[in-house]
Each structure stands twice: as C-alpha cells, then as structure tokens.
Amino acid sequence: MQTLSLAFIGGGIGSAIGYTHFIASQMDSRFKLKAGCFSKDFAANKKSASLFGGDIRLYSNYESLLLNEVGKIDAICILTPTPSHKDIICRALELNYYVICEKTLCTNLKEALQIKKILDVKRSFLAITYNYTGYPMLRELQTMILNNEFGKLHNIQIEMPQEGFIRNINGSIPKPQNWRMRDLEIPIISLDLGVHILNIISFLSFKKPLSLFAVANSFGHFKNIIDDVNILAEFSDKLVANIWYSKSALGFRNGLRVRIFGEHLSAEWLQSNPEELLINTKEGERIIKDRASPNIFANKYDRFKAGHPAGFIEAFGNYYNSLADSIISFRSSKSLSPYIFGIDSAIEELKFLQAISKSFKSKRKVNL
Image (tube, rainbow, N blue to C red):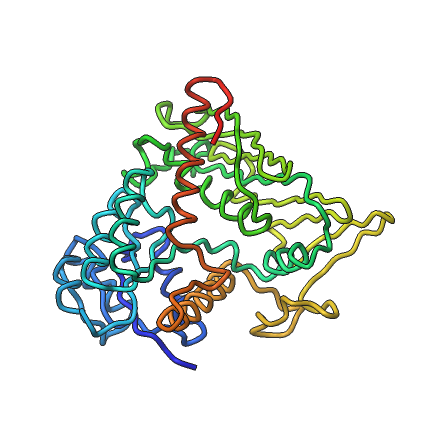
C-alpha cells in the first residue's frame, strides 16, 4: 500500500487538533509527515518538529515551506485557525499542491468562492476533514440508507451539546483560544460545531436544504459570543431536520447524537457509545449492530477484533485512509472518494451557516 508524503501548516504544540491529525495520519502508514511549519513561535515550532519526528524539514513560515516543498510532497495539510485558511489554501493551490484542510474550509461564502475560482483553474485536489464520518457505525448507517433499508427518510434529529463556555475548571473560568473569542459573519460556534452536523446530515441523507428557522443565544461566560443554536430545517424530498449545537450545555463534554427516522426503520447513534448502532423496526424489534454483527459493512475498519472498542482517533484514522485513497484515485480520475468532501460541500455548508445567521438576526424563516 502506497505511503504518501505530507506537510503540516499549523497543528503544533498548543493546537487543539494538531496532534490528533498527526496520530490519525500515521496510524495505518498511509501518510508520512515530512515537512512542517507548525507555529509562528520559534520555540514551539522547533519543539513540535521534535515531537512529530526528528527528520522533518522545518520552516519558520508557511510561504517558505510552500516555495521549497514543490514537487517533494503529496499533500499539504492546513491546521491553522479557520480565519487564516483562505490565504494559505489559495497560495498552496497556485503552486499546484494537493490540499487537505481542517474544517471549516473558511469563514464565509465569499472566501469559499475565491478558493473555488483557483481550484477550477488548477483542477487540483482539495479535501476538508470531517472526522465524525470516519466512525464505522456512521458509515454502516449510510450503507443501510443507500441500500434503501430505511425507505423514505422522514426526520433527522441531530445534536452536539458541549459545556466548554459555561462550566468552570477548579473554580476558574477557562479561556478559549483567542480566535474563538470573536464572532464573525458566521458565529464561531457554527464554524466549529454546526459544520460537523451539516456534514453528517449530507453524508447520511444526500438531500438538499430548502429552508430553515434558527434561534441563537449566549448563555455562557462570554456574553458577546453565541454559544447555543437551535434550528428547524426543511430538506428536499420532505425531510425535516431538528438541529441543536451548544457550548453552554452543562453535563456534556461532547454529546453528539444522531437519530434518523424512515418509513421502515429508525436508528440512533451516540458518540459516547460509538461501537453500537441501535436499529428499530416496524415490528417493534430493537436491534443493536456492532462490528461483530453478521453481514456488516463496518467490519472492514477492524484494526482489532470487536469487543475491543475503537474511538475518536481510530475514526480519524479511517478518514485519513479515505483521504489517501482519494488522493491516489484523483491523480487518474479527478474524482473524490465518496467519503471525502471538497469545495462543493463546503460552499453548500457555508450557504446554510450564513442562512442560520440571517434567520436568528431577522427572527424569520430563510429560504436557501
């Protein structure tokens, strides 16, 4: 199996997600980290390179990395804060790099369209990481839906409550990263959490959003930052979605839950118990699927036998496996793996997120 060479921009010590990307990308030997500019801080940059591997080619800024690594690596992985993504992505695409970018692609629709303009000219590779769809049971659920086992889909209820903006730690208020402390055209919570939810809805339903009504609040410590969003959305083919994401929900570290209801079956999946998928039938049966169930698609992701739980990092590793497959196939077919999401998905998500902001500000339903 081919091992691809990778460079990180961002993701150093102090990053919320950098080390997770490193572990996930190396897990199945699909990628090897060869170069990086991990931090603007000299000491943190050097320390990060030592942590990730002593033979990494280290750069003090992303521009010098991009100029010097042309033709040497298979993909650039961008792990900087979201507001900085657009400029780095555009520069990387101009130099003909294949680009992997941590969600959200950018901060608004205008930036996404600027990226698409360059991407269309260069006909290059751009993929965004949405790690939750790497969970085997979510991929199993998608397979069942594609096989029409659910019949017509009626309703999706999906929530992602967290408590980071309302709880205390040892009597003190925790301080988020500085860039998360200023809402933009799209609130940071939508760029952080909302985009994951939209990705899961698209991944499972393949339906297009038609309209939505949203309510947003600030309940936590930071009164100028939106930290709780509720949405009722209509999708094509009469699918209705009930969406809630929050950073002010006490008691939830990350309470991601997906429930989907169809004419023949319903299903429930919780990230807190990711190895099991609960299926309900018209006959009143309650069936629990896991990686040991017979005739199950998800057992292709076994790194060890069922009964030994896999989790978030392994799901991210599955996503990096799909990224590697997608890069290799893109070279010949210019198409992405069905598990990988690119610029078109990002544009649709940003349209939806901007509509959420428009709805809660106007207190009206918004058509998409």
